[in-house]
Length: 372
Image (cartoon, rainbow, N blue to C red; front, side):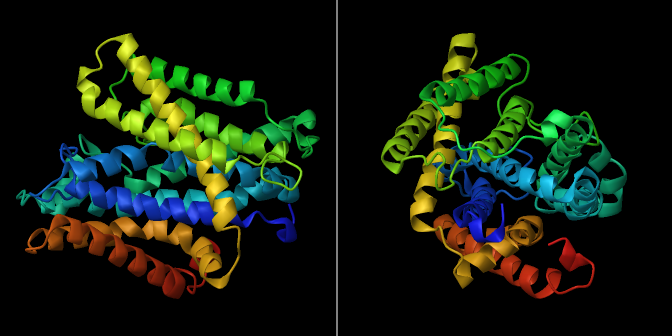
């Protein structure tokens, strides 16, 4: 894909999704029934933020995997597997390792700091961080993504048939689209038979992930590869229709939200109840991808200066936002303000500060700027 044929709304879609990541992480601070381990929890909470979290949490990272897969193939074909993987190690692998090893510990220490736990950072790092509280914060995504890029590069290097694949616009059938939803639902359900909802696996220090969503990580990345190969979003390729996918998005989102409120995770004790949750989750997720793509293609298929700047800085915004969001959230706990106002200010401040720091610092520093 040459620059003149760039599908701008996908770049802008990624920027919108990363903004929603900030909204999600802010909302967890103020949601009812928040995870006990969350970095900062305000004593005030609301079911409104619980609803926001339940909805936003479903599609956002899977859309990012899809977009990464969509743009991976032309980059791989242009650079070749060795250079492609070297570039990805610089842009994804090194930031992942630095984030997981250097930035994740102080971010995780916010759990203790916000609760006045009398443990020094050094003691926390030496003991609990490498034990029950081990995590990679938001940098887990970079680790999984780099793994996918490595596997893709290997397949490209060893398979002559793989290298000969060319983009050819093909319209997907409804059987294919529905089949993808059902396949993802089945993978989600099978994992749910062994792991509870919304849990994270930290058994390996190398990769951190949500077990139920592993089939979806793979599925949406592969779908992105397939979408590029079959010309989705190109002039002659598949264009999801807003009139079809937006109603499916809204209806499935409301049904999923109602299901989670009426039958929360701990109450999903039978395979039938788990299957209902899996089907609604994955219908909403897939329709968020196609409905969101259809909406943004109509509204934001542009490279005007504002959105071009947002797209260019979205990676840095994702990378930096926890370092800004959680300390600000802790400061805001003591403020005598409505939690709705707190959340609004926190989202705006985090977004602006992450954006400014990315544009004026990360994008300007030698060596660092080639990453971000």
